[in-house]
Amino acid sequence: MASRNISDIKLLRYIGRIAIAFCELEDELELGVAAELHDDCDEIGYMVTCKMNFQQKLELYERLVHHRLISCEETKRAKDFEAFVREIKDIQDFRNN
Image (tube, rainbow, N blue to C red; front, side, top):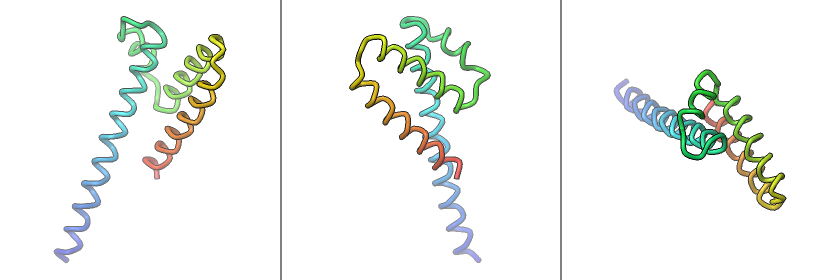
């Protein structure tokens, strides 16, 4: 019985680390949205994203950055960015599972 409790504690510790890392990722995403909306005022980004879930924030960030990259004719970077967004979506799926 005691060994099961130890493994449960280890599992909870890993789940906690994943949750914290995901919160940090979400915070960086909000900062990214803020930077795309207005370079020197993070509050605007936070006002826009405050009621959004992670998926909505990611979709907004993806649209903002993709638009900027395409309008600046940086198609190579746009493709790299799309791969980056797919990785973030994979991380989200991992966290949800």
